[in-house]
Length: 443
Image (cartoon, rainbow, N blue to C red; front, side):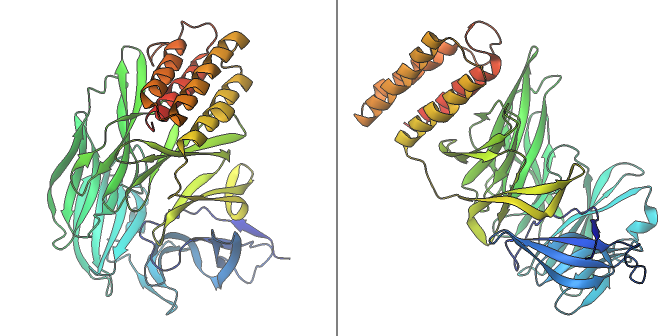
């Protein structure tokens, strides 16, 4: 049997158009096992729809796939360092070294190609690189998507925080490109004209309060002119995290959603759903909260096993895949699926079901983790939830909201509190207080 080892691969599908829902990766032959095939690889793909892995092509001299383009093409790096566009259908490659200024010739100064995105209608290919000398910056190359002739280049400041592979994205109608630029006073994107490849202006999508000494702002995800931005504000020694949806196409943002847990945000391709993968105190489970991106209304909450990632594909806009793979010496092996959970994005959990979820999951987990104690106090909390559900089923929304308000008041009056109620620990307080607020938003 062939023994293979995995090569480091950075693969992010930004504008996938032909092979979804596939995830591509190269597997390199072990030299000791195959001395006659040094530096040869197989190109494999993971099919999220079926959970199967197959080999697309064998005996390649490609070290890794940097990104996937349309028309069965990839940005690849060969073992001798050459960056190229490889056409799988034609089995040909185009050397990018001359076009990109021989990036591999400046290995000390250059990180290299970060990612690429293309649009067939505009015949435009954008390659995003990062350069560290003489100063850190991002350099974007605009190429003809057929001949690979260089149109132009744009140099922009390098962004360190957040998802750096979502910094540049096409607008919804593909006429513009947006590059995220954090600022201490607002949420800004630089706008580049897709036809002229020139920077047009800086678009302000929203304002934020003073970040404070420890505060910061970062991009969670961006695509099709939509983005999820998180930022932290400091009030004295208290750090508070907010998440907002940005419609960069129209220069607007949603109201800030206070989400106090460490999380990773994603936005659906149509911009209507915001997904937050919450890290929980449990080592075995995590939670995916799906919100209406414009109203911050909680649509559904899904419990998933810990250790996975969310994948979404443009040709499958109504579903998200939560993917857990095997690990090898602590590193994820993306071509060895352990579990794939398909999450329909058009599903909306009913309000009665949300009440049941709150009791059986949110409150129950806080009790199990000893984040809320004292049986009498717990019974009081459960009574408020039961009363609120009863009022809702009687169509008495006002009293249902009053019961949820009493529930939150019994926990404490301020989200920033650390002490005060001897029966509720800090994590239990966050879990109960904010989820009760999200539930109230559905009434």
